[in-house]
Image (cartoon, rainbow, N blue to C red; front, side):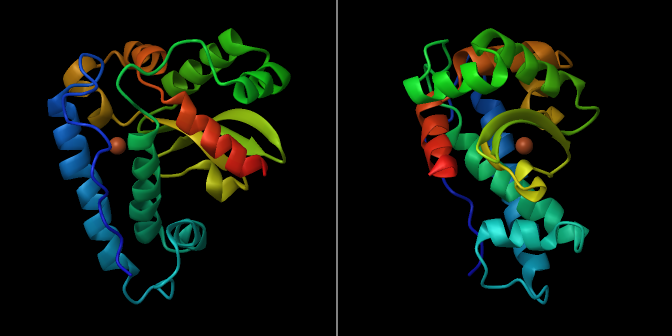
Length: 200
Ligand code: FE2
């Protein structure tokens, strides 16, 4: 079955002023759509047709770069829209998530600093992540369309640091984008859901 572009789970202007309608229109309708369209084209004849998205991402990594770039980005963006919500962010996390961050990452403030730093120091396009590996949380960064799935981990939060995600609203100020994103947009309830699924 062909992959499809999911609708945004909120209106285009719902994340302003931290992420504008113009950014979401380009990012969702143009960039994400292109990953879906190109991914579906490259899926034909790849031997991975009919598999689920996660299996296509893992199955193409290191073997079919063109397909991987597009389906990796499709996976990343499907979740990226869900990892944000209007009036998100804040420092009050759901209990189980806060406990895990205290246990594995040295507390909320250190986690926030490490996550923002991962996004800031990813040279060129890529992502910063919070993922579960062997039952423990870890912060990481990846280039281009790569994600923790292909490194044996389960991503539970990721931020897009491609310029298309912030250049309209923040120009070159990537750290400012990352701080605003973390403090005002993250949908922690969704992060908790993914944490629980990854540790079940
Ligand atoms: Fe993106």
